[in-house]
Length: 215
Image 1 (cartoon, rainbow, N blue to C red):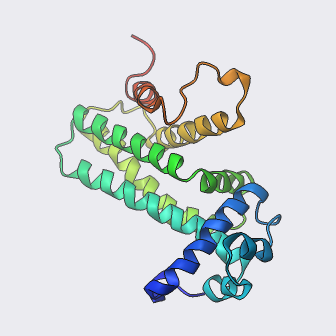
Image 2: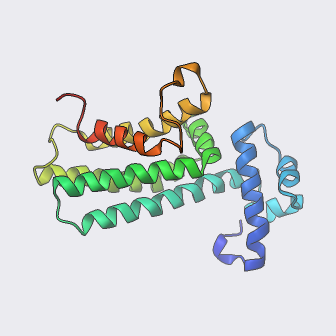
Image 3: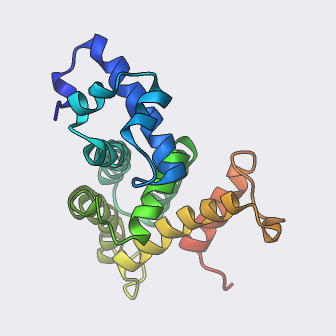
C-alpha cells in the first residue's frame, strides 16, 4: 500500500478525492454495502487507483479511520503539551478539560461521516480498526488520563475519580449527544443545536464534568 509520504504533490489530489468519496459512502452504506466501483464512480477516479493507493477496499476503510484518529491525536497532544507547561492547579485542570471538550466538538463537527463510521465500528466490536484503537487511541486516552492523575496528586481533583471512567464518560457523552442530534427526534426540542448553540453546549458539558450538579 502506498503511504502518504511516498506521494508527489500531483498524486495527493486523486488520493484525497478517493478518501473523501469513500468516507461518505462508508458512512452511508457501511463497508460491506460499498463497492470499489461505487467509490470510483463517486470520486471520479479510475478503479485501479484504489488498489494502487490503498491495496483494496478494506485498507481504504482502515485508512479513513487511521487518518482521522491521527488528526485527533495531534490535536490532543497540543492540549496535553499546553497543560504540561503550566503548574498543576484547579485553573490549569479546568483550562485543559475545556480545551479537550472544544477539540472533541471541533473534530465531531468537521468530520460527521467519519464519526458515523467510528460509531458503527465500535458497535460491531472493532472488526477492522482494533489495532488502531489499541495503539493510537489508547495512547491518546492515557495522555488525557494524565490530566486527572496529575490533578489528584496535586490535591485539586477528587481522588475517588477514576481517570479512565471520567475520560470515557466525557468522550462518549459528547459523541452520543451528536448522535442524538443526528436522529432528529422530537425529544431533541430544547437541546443545543450545533454549531449555532455551541457555546451553550460547551458551558453545560464543562459544568457537568468540572462542577457536578449539586450545590
